[in-house]
Amino acid sequence: MTWILENWQGLVGGGSLTTIVAYVVNRQNNKADLLTKISGLYDGLLDDIKQSKDELKEQNAELKEIIKSYTDQFTELRKSQNMLQGQFNDLNIAYTREVEKSLYWMQKYDELDKKYNELMAKHEEVIKQNEHLENLCEGLKTAHNKLQKEFETYKKANK
Image 1 (cartoon, rainbow, N blue to C red):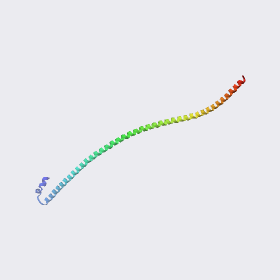
Image 2 (tube, rainbow, N blue to C red):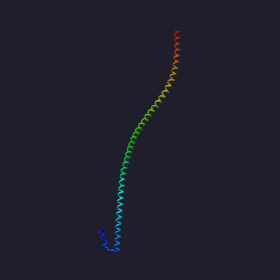
Image 3 (cartoon, one colour):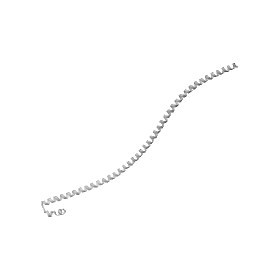
Image 4 (tube, helix red, strand yellow):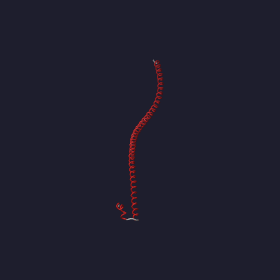
């Protein structure tokens, strides 16, 4: 095709056919120039896209590092939360046991207090009975002393 473009005038001759061929050739040259320009633009766009792609890769790597950092922090927080939950569970169990012990001893205290009150009521009854018996004993002593005096008097009188 290049040879035809270089030697077209000799093949065709002059005249209107030359004008048509010149038009077609110029049109081909314009298309080639357009293709060259488009190719240049395309190459420039490819370079820009490649540069943007490289920048995005760098940003992606930075974001991955940030996400990894946050993930590590989250993992540490999760470990701390699990440790605190374990401590809370242990404290809750210990507290529950202490409450159970307290309830047990409170129940024992209530039982002993009830027994104490019953014993104190019986003790007061015994004290009242004892006072009554002491009064009777005093009366008996008085009666005994009186009888003994009478006996002594009788004995002296019968001698």
